[in-house]
Image 1 (cartoon, helix red, strand yellow):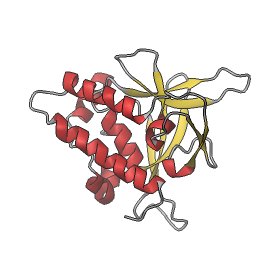
Image 2 (cartoon, helix red, strand yellow):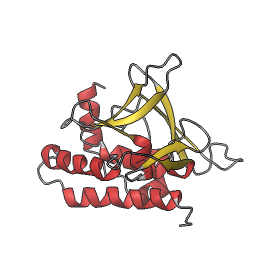
Image 3 (tube, rainbow, N blue to C red):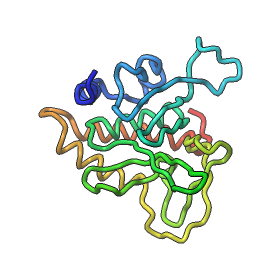
Length: 204
């Protein structure tokens, strides 16, 4: 399927709600219906006896073009990223620090600010000013529950709130006539409430 057709196909699919994530994750996160930045996806579980027949808890996602990167996120986090990029303008991309042994990072790009990228880890963790996000264990585990913060000298580092302003702008500009933008944005906030619950170690 051509890129433009995949974008339209995903944009027309039902909203990914927290309830759907809990009940039908395997059906939602398939290669048939996905944002174009998702090059591959596999669902896994943190349950040590998970054999593929139970309910998954996290996704391993292949992203990037020139710099391919495999990232791990919980299911509510990947659902939030899917929804934020529903209309194709906002995308998840990768970039390199161009060191001798380069590190590759997943970031979000916005058509209203070409070249301005916001860290996916910061968006998912909802990091604030003067907070730097770091992985707890694995470098490319971007789940907020696997992220820690350190003091940072940048008071205005941008993350979730700035990204959501871009998402709202894109929805108003690109959503088809009759699309319920307030409900769409409320659903993303509901997904992030689940992301934050996992980050804070709160049981459902």
